[in-house]
Image 1 (cartoon, helix red, strand yellow):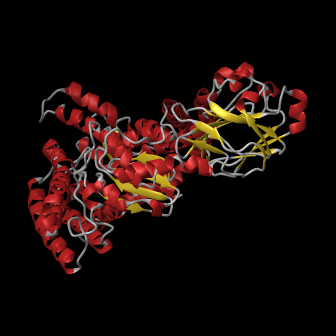
Image 2 (image 1 turned 135 degrees about the vertical axis):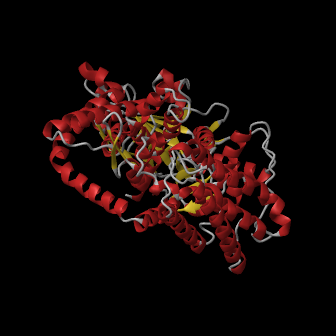
Image 3 (image 1 turned 30 degrees about the horizontal axis):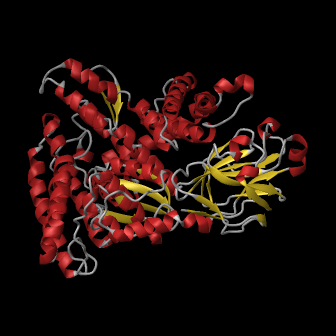
Length: 634
């Protein structure tokens, strides 16, 4: 459930990323700015359709490949839900929750049915084309249920929202405290979505009802803003002052090393309101320090509320949003006064606690822990950083999935203990969070998307050593990972190993599909020969494509010309996209049936992406399932 909520939190960043564009267009179109209604209408086009954008963005975020088919399914889900549900109860307006529910359902259905196979006469509607169809059916049923179930749910949400909105300083302070406290686990997006896009209602000049703190503020609601205003002093002044405190508390000999980093992340927080790189630099070194930060955020929110300050943002509480929305704000200059006060408090509190408790904030590490961050990455900095980051994360063997949100990598690994935090920081990471034994997050900053995509590309290719690197130890680690296949590959089924040239199929025998060998099977169950994942299963079940943790592709093809059996004689134990370990059962085969109905039962094992490497078969003859040391790759 925790991982699922994290995925939703990450997926919310797709639609939230549209808010800066909406805010800019909406503000510049207002009379107190450029006075161009055309621009304001363009911005409203985004704000007024946020629920639909949420449906599309969340569906893409949850889809295993971020595919456009999931986006279409999300849109279909939202349209079916919102149009059908009002027939049952015309007073229902689910707002952003309609988008969230639609996106979640569409994303899950996409992952379930993107590769579904239909009979030949319906084959056109198979695969990804089937997803919008099944989504429409599912959402029709769900709309029928929610037509009766949603009103009491909405009443509960509205009651909670009214309580928070009417709780005065307590409600505002509690929200500010929880907003910061949930950042370490990445669930702050969930609570933000409810407050920003659902709490409170306002009827604009066109008679349209808008919901949520951000929407109401940008639409001119004079009561909106108390749940946003208090963030400006923290993000523009408080956390940059914390950076100054950490710099002043750093060892003299290390200040030159950490100074540039502190200036960069402090300026980013001041200008844009992106603060995670700062927060991750101390949250795990001292939970006490981070709790103090969360409490100070709540206090700033309460002070802004007490002084009747109203201000808001389209993305985050940085200087850009402060200036952009200044004309809509109430008493905005007082935020600067509060900001200076919070800056002083942050500096004094942080400096005192760091020195008094001897916290190992950046620059205060032991001499053998801190390293000069200068690394010669050669010509392609991003590609080299991706390479070193993969190695620091335990190599391709250890990494299972790579994902990201605004500033951090979200990864699933086999063993979090294999992750080298020291080397991650050496190559640009600002912090590491080990959520559990297999789930970690690495704070990178606003360039995280580019690094994540570069890492994904390298993972697919086995993370080869870059042409230029000044760290010899990395080459050794990569060589070790590359050679791990000869140790990890195991006999997938009882049988006799034969040369590939003896397989009675010219395509396999001449190596047209890649290097490999054949097995004359005597067993009836095919097991995974490697650790990795299943990338494809042929509709007729006779062939399974695997990808090892080192990026090597393995094709297991049961029998010759067995595609004509149309699945008869095969029983699957796995599915496409599934992570597998060596020895996991994949497929049960009926040898007698295959022998009677196909030209041969021989199983070709093909390594489809070995191009420059040479495959050597070390064993031949009869081998038992699970036998290792079968092959070597150089």
